[in-house]
Length: 142
Image (cartoon, rainbow, N blue to C red; front, side):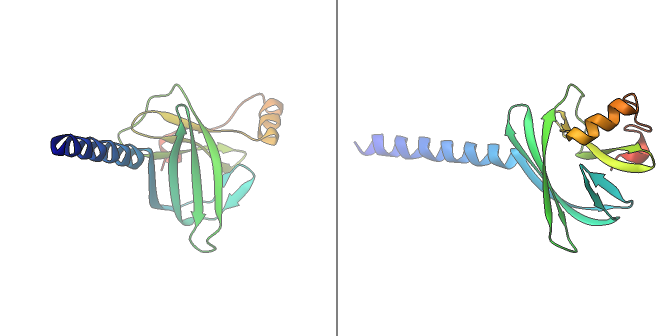
């Protein structure tokens, strides 16, 4: 009986450690200094320091939270996994539309996630013929 309790305890610890490591891999938060003004959805941000938190929700989706360190306001957006390959390190990818930079993608080690566009952004893309200048070039990745 004592041996059965020891085996049960060890198995329980293994399950807890594997769950903790899975959680640690599905979420991260980093401080970033973005050197230019940018937009996320319909919200504008000045250049500066931000805390960015990425969390995988289900296979193929995630959330991204951006905290302004000056005001402590937080914006959370939904991300969908895309077919683009990941990168060696986490990268934020911006598009430039009519002189304004928009956060469009987050590249992780496993895959690239795209920000779900608002209805207004989809309508703007239709009016412009789906064109976005400077999509994902090196100056628009951070």
